[in-house]
Length: 213
Image (cartoon, rainbow, N blue to C red; front, side, top):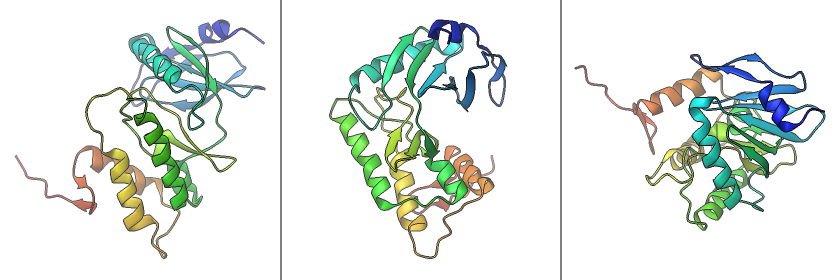
């Protein structure tokens, strides 16, 4: 198998909207996630994932590496094995994001939510401020455990209410006895869009009146 550096050098990422385009890569790399600042690959025949950042986002790679170093030994997060200017080599996590669980109808439990809270409290005890915690950044693993997979914004100084708002929505709606546990993508993505636009607010998850200007 090629070295990590050779695998990183084999990848060409083109910045485009709505998401990055992977122009080329080594055959041993399988795309498993495309985010706002990086692309994640599984290295085939291994239990490793390679997260590669385009040049404009290399500063985020360095920031994540520093945060992973602080989280070393914390079982709620992937382990970091190697880092460079534009990449991270971390555990491959087998399972589904909470977003995918809702999409596929894989039941979530109140214990799962408590475990996310436990993970965030463990981070706060280190003096970090976990931010950008949402359904796509939290995984329910094949073993039924919780893992958080994006730590880039854990040193922000401002309060981020996303996770608290998600918990309120789950407790007031999802965990009710007769609420469907499988939710179409159009509904999930619609709520996320309205939330970002601040049209949907917590805790009542109600639509605010949008004033015409």
